[in-house]
Image (cartoon, rainbow, N blue to C red):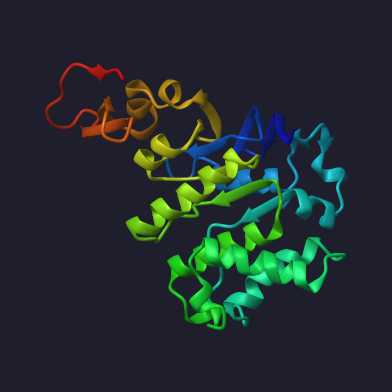
Length: 265
């Protein structure tokens, strides 16, 4: 079973002493304020950067010991922004995800790319220049490229940023299904309500350090919302979506507040 383990990982003062152990079947949300270290941590996990302290292991092997192709076969990484001036159409861009499969047949590559495009509802845009897409559509193309890569670990930096509500839900539902079929997905996400609803686990970062890790209900407590995000909020169980929800009251110390209340499932 695919396993990603971080042991005392640090990078300057941006990320410090991060230790987690995740495995296939989990959809992990990296949450925290801007500048908390989410993007840097994803780059360290992807091997784009090497930690100053600690190590990142994939199935017990330090990822720095893997060659570029071997790492790409195991881990797909989507950065926060895809440049607007990429001189390829959508099909060509997604096809680049097959770089790590040099021995695959043309038919296998074609099938993988077409399936990835279909999953992200981009079949109609296959021949469209990437530069002509909106920011949200480029993000969907980026996710499609990761899917075409067929890596068992997906590291995604804000994959639903700039997307409308329909595609936010669509992508998160697709990612949830991937974890059910044996993938490990780790994504940075600012939308706390959607993180609560779709993620199986959360890692809450604050000023580069772990503030909490594990079950959604334990990590995203009312106290954590106040301490890390500076907001007063109540958490409650929503029977309509069978999920924890947030009711934001105000910034900490501003406006009326009331005693914490938690309605359980």
